[in-house]
Image (cartoon, rainbow, N blue to C red; front, side, top):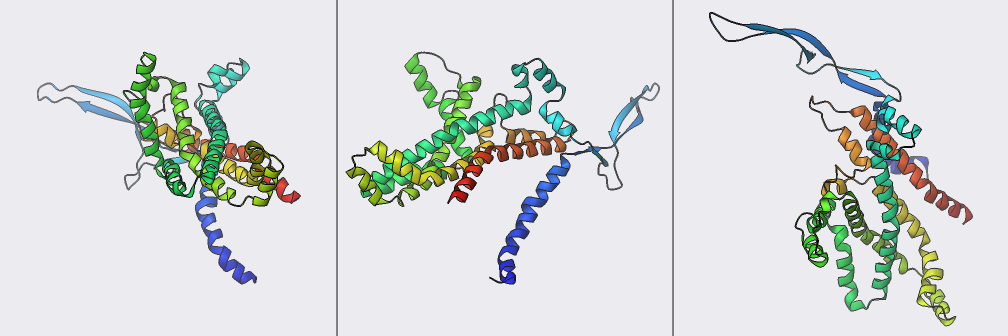
Length: 339
């Protein structure tokens, strides 16, 4: 292919990647090393009470933001190096917690609290997503043609539903006087307050993630099952291999590239979980790294946002994703070189 033709095909993609990925990433990186704050000044303001014969006046000094000729707040940008990263990681609280081996104090720092839950959420849901997706695919693949279509449709429903709506549906089943809560209370003759228990909320968030993402794994595995060599399977049957042995020694090795693919997608997606925190209103009990970044961007009482801390949190989240993906990507690269 001529270079001009190659450039015409690749050029638009490269331009869009630079515009929407590379430039914002560089901007976030720069923002994590600098702090932009409004400029304030102090003014002496005299306030007088109403009155004709006797009027009392008080003088007080107030700190007010400096405005430019257009009425906008004047700001100043200062290069702070790694200070924002240190603040996000906990600063002096982190040092004290590590020096005293106080992991309880460590997990009370927002970043480490969010990292603990994000890693637990990501790594625990992964095997369930893979196992449930493969189980559904095997069942559908062996179902009769008459029921195969309806089963596929029902299996895909959780993946079709909007994530926030799906999370709210699970929440309404268990929070307050939800149907599932009332049923469990009647069965065990006790009062349940799911929303007040952090571990129960964490379990529901993981349950929702597996329920929502397993259909994606099912679709990928079902497509892969259509390419399994039937001659190899028939040879295994003739050799006396059981269903489990055929699955373990023929089907799963054949699907291994798809297992790695789903693992990569799930690790990236689950590590950036956000809608679960909103859907289950778990901000006071469980937060994710993505939600922590969002929280830094919320304006305080004075209307200021912690842009630098949010940028540092976003960069730390991205570094975490790269570390998580390193192992499966290394395996993929090794298999590619071996092939």
